[in-house]
Image 1 (tube, rainbow over the protein chains, first blue to last red):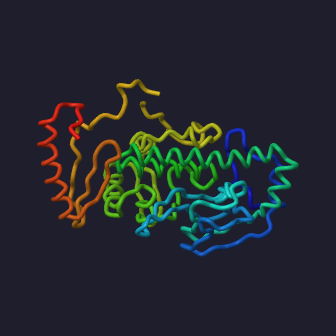
Image 2: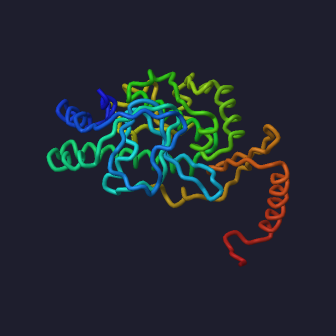
Length: 249
Length: 65
């Protein structure tokens, strides 16, 4: 089943059996991608949407010098470009980070779903609103947090998203990102990220080696990153995120 | 929404500069996180000292432009 991770454990949005079957039947193709490949370019007219099944992908924007800012990281279960269904084009590029597999759903199938299944349509809308909530958290991270907190926040967020997707047991996960990618997520240089990763390790919060993240103290990492998972709309986050402690406001 | 007194204010704590792998990393509050070459860091440092001297002679909240 290709859609098993889509909206998994999302509050009020988990798919019913019939909704999941309908989405599965709308898949026209399953594509595999090599790592570090362009998947969709900004401005291209899109007639299909892409559900990530396996691997990591990203949305990004380049500045005039060609330097990349990652504006979203996608984990299995995410639609990469569902917003292009109403918008028809993207305002950012999409690329793979690791090798990846994705299910393709033509927009013509989404038209039929939108006409016939309002509750499933609401859940697809939920998915794009969840994207927007994550973007707001990324704005907060870049605007308010210092370097170590930015990385801590991102690692807590990714841990929570992967837990929700069934891909992290809460303490250890394969991230698939290099320190250079992490720099492009957090608006830092690779030298700065390298120093932050060392600090996180020395403070006993987490390690990041060979793209494998091991969280040593989730509670302190959560506080250090001012991470509050409410914006991820996960069912019962206190049950699913061990030792979650709300940061003091 | 926090009270107006919680609005962004000029930082009273200094940024911390450290040398890493031949460059200077500058960290501070309010999201300050940047990396500079040694030359750029030295010129930024002098520019900060010069601006601080001028700022001390100005009235708080005034705009002399």
